[in-house]
Image 1 (cartoon, rainbow, N blue to C red):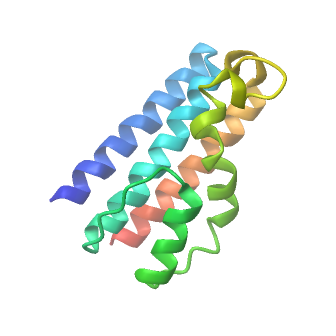
Image 2 (image 1 turned 120 degrees about the vertical axis):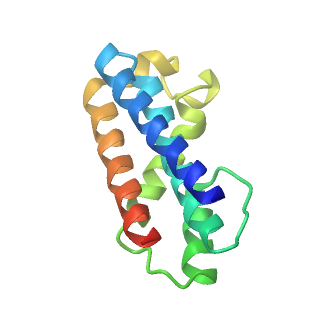
Length: 128
């Protein structure tokens, strides 16, 4: 089933985020954390017959809430935080006060990764 492919890739992206944290590539950890969540949310949407394009995690959350009628209140703060890392972690103009690889700390990367893990787990629970 298509949604299982999206979830499998989300889990692999989460592993890549973990590897990036361990290697000290904190900006990459943030990016891959965002990607894992985006793909997990899309897996949930696809499992219910909704194909949605875009990278805004908050918007995906609203679609899940409004169209799938699933309560997303538990993850919305995480989505608000994680969605910013789609650009901030990659593009110099979007990284305040430096380059992406300079502005991310181990603590920030660890925090972002933990949020991503929680959202992916939430998706897994809602897929059942």
